Length: 93
Image 1 (cartoon, helix red, strand yellow):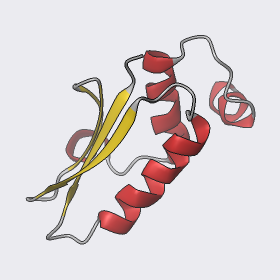
Image 2 (image 1 turned 90 degrees about the vertical axis):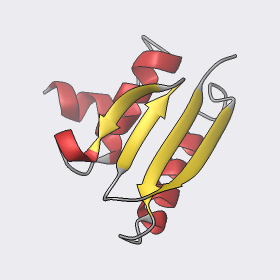
Image 3 (image 1 turned 120 degrees about the horizontal axis):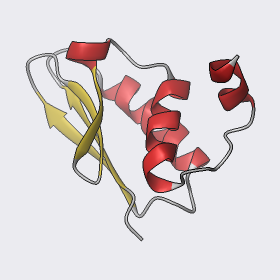
Image 4 (image 1 turned 45 degrees about the vertical axis):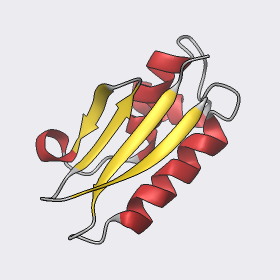
């Protein structure tokens, strides 16, 4: 099983609570698909989500993510084809 997620967050900006909340959302949604979820302290306004070392969300390029957007990006890499229920419907309509 792959499925290692890393959330790098800025400690100077005090974004740990946001990173921890997003981590909880991902672990709840993908408890069977993820092998690991790491919170990585960073600096300089960083807030980046990686799956197996591939950047799937970068705040500097995309702004702060909605949980649904990150779940879809993670799903596409760890469980392609899996429905996310109401999260998918709202994004596709």
